[in-house]
Image 1 (cartoon, rainbow, N blue to C red):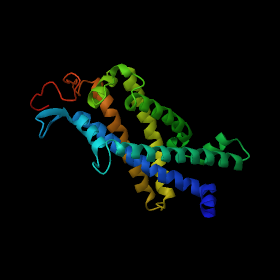
Image 2: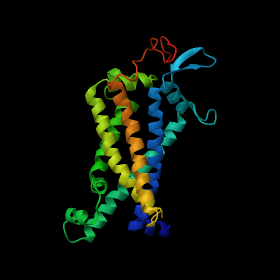
Image 3: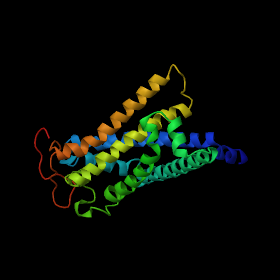
Image 4: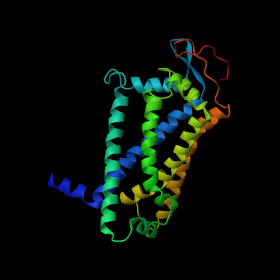
Length: 255
């Protein structure tokens, strides 16, 4: 146990914890983006039921029923939430403690020291985008997960409709677009640093590491903002549900 305490108290240990928790976040945002893009995929005939549902709704329902009967309904989501919260706590705690350690170790003003050591725009924004993204996460959970805010447009089970109705309001769409840009700033440098901490730090590989971080970030940001932009631009069609149901009211060939 003493070795773990020494490991955690060291700056290297905190960087490794941030890197490992970062791997979890990178995997999550990629899968989350993939799921969001189902907003563009229209409807699908549900075999055995003879009804059409939005692929976004089918995807959301599969997340809740995944692993049954070994897992109970919705258990996978609760497991994922627990892992993400734990990773977030460790990530934020380690980041704050590293900041305090670095600040204490330098007699000069930390802001000036940071500027002198960090050379990229993305690295200089890390200490600002982190807290902003935390606030966004809270807002996002209250909006789409619990429905505590903007509740007039939130209907349980109608995920496609909830997303569409939310992003019909331009300023809500703008909040998400700006938040995704901040996420891109954080991801670009975070992925670069994570690969370095995990041992991929070789002059011959650094250019590849930079290109990979940039490409991954662009894919994530563009994938996320495509949904609010697609709704605002009218590319994603208005939902049509039967009353109190996730089944669509009609289906047009090719939708």
